[in-house]
Image (cartoon, rainbow, N blue to C red; front, top):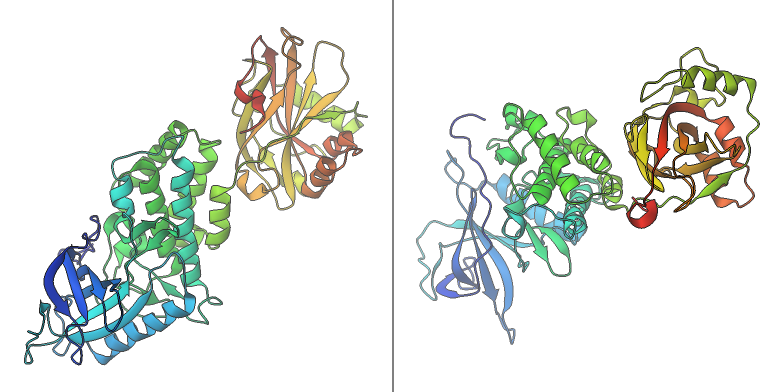
Length: 499
């Protein structure tokens, strides 16, 4: 960012409804809007809560923003092009009719704020935007300085999902009738939390069409700006820049702090570490998965950021699926599988992967890789235990855990699908649960737990059918990793029935 680059401002709420004696309006009705309070000062102008009465029995609340001329504005600002852009924005936003974006009602030129009946006739005109008044605190006021807790995490993620929905609708070619646009200044001070609508983006003066070209002003807020825009704020922007801003907003929602600007030394590592820490402290079901999901929006490469924000938002707020306990009947182990097990269990490393020369038992899953990071090999477990790790899965495959008691002679293996098994794209960092006998039986015995990649539709059929042959599901999969664990007395909260 170059010296003197204009930066948008954010933070305080709009003022309370206290009359200040000032009015504003177009030349033919200069006292149309009564301005309230001292106004909120920002990088582009001053915004007041206002009242419109006209011939109505009771005045209506609105927001009136007086725009400052931009630095080095040419004589005659605003140009007809500026005026047309604002008119286009008003029509587009009315067409979109978005719950999570403020409505723009009117654009006019008029005298500066003045006492009733005292509008100067010879004063130069200024530009005003009239928007709906959205009551509620800004995210900045609501969350600044307060980290997410187990009691507030889902609510805060809900705000992020609503912002994602707003940006997805603005950028949608179909929803916008072929006129996709960008917000370009997503930040806590530009988000109001409404009692019924949830999060609402309230400042649309930075809105531009995706097809707009060079940006003379290059306005941006550094902490919420993507690295490519920081490097060249005047160049045309793509929807991926708004996606980065969404990720920065998510960081604020979880931590209560602005993220470090993307071009600050060590910013990526600081952001990742802080997100992981707050996800763990706030009791996220899978802190690693949540962190990875959020970090995808903050990727330094625009092409790697999510492109389907609606789907991204659904996955962000989805409740991880609870596994169901399933007994696997005695398996008829094939020669190839027996050879594979022999190779794998000869190793004592915590994570064991399939050697490349071992023949697969299923086609697509051959390309899968995976690890078990917790518990480690030889760990003690109670009646049940949570397992987690990493995986790289080709399309159409998912993960299961299979457990066998190594000491009691039971030939059966017991199968669990991992959490969110129906959404393989989310399993790069997976989590699941496995069970080891009852409250009192099994204590002191050793167990083996295998991580396998299997066909997603085969797993779905197995889960949906009471007569499905689960041993066939395991034998059709590829063994990715394995650990041995030792059963000790005790139980785990919720008996591992949820994430």
